[in-house]
Length: 390
Image (cartoon, rainbow, N blue to C red; front, side, top):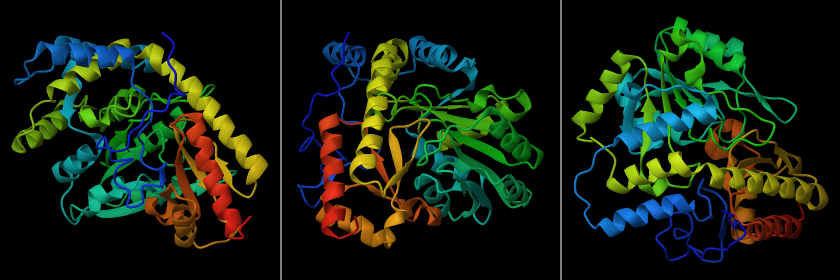
């Protein structure tokens, strides 16, 4: 069926984290990774069917649930997952916290790139674990890995884990197989567990490719925990259902035992139904979404070139989050964000939240109807012009 991503869905006063947490109701939210599109019809139909059944008692992951996960990653990522590798988690951010507690002791260290999605370092620091950053190299409007520093850091005996954001958030980079294998070998050789967050792995632009960490050589994949979910792909974060793919039985047992000690056993009933429907029948919706997102990205690039040429973007390989570089304006990062938020009435994610390397950047969410994207860009242009910056 044909999906209309131009449709405006009123989300205010719906209990939306994105739309209902603003002090000023005139602010346009374009920050958190939450799409403003109605989900795929097969997901709505499956949830309606479950609702009409009328019984919501204790639920289990069905055969259809496991087959949906296995089938999705096989046909879309050429990654053959064994059912016995699949563990539950209520979300990827909770997973990062759980893994910090299950595999790393207070006082030890977790390595991660910088800049990076800010809950990464929050999941360490909030559990009394030190963060060590492998600062990405910003070159030709693209991030590259400083492998010399990466290897030096991994050799520190107190570094117990490496949290990998793949595709990268906020830069939108997909890492090549060679880059992933090189990072993986370094970590495996030094006893550093790799936790790969692949929550954006399905949102890849035309001509680009995502390589799943699970398709790397077995000795590398064996030293990993891979986090996947339909929450970003299909905008199902509110169903709080994710999977950790752990092929090493000893690592999986350790995680499952930790989860059991927390009393977290299985997804909620709607999470099971939503994931199953998404991964079984969501391909058509996703293909149409990717075309729309690519057109939004083109619109964004053309708009900036025409109206705000001082602002550049790091062109993403994947995700619907675009890393905007405002450094040519030579303005303090906090003042820039305040101008956009207070004067422009547009809420982006401030770059410095992603670490020191994020200063001078803002992250924008383009997963919205094009009229909304245009309105947001107009607000950015007008506020910068009023401040005498362009």
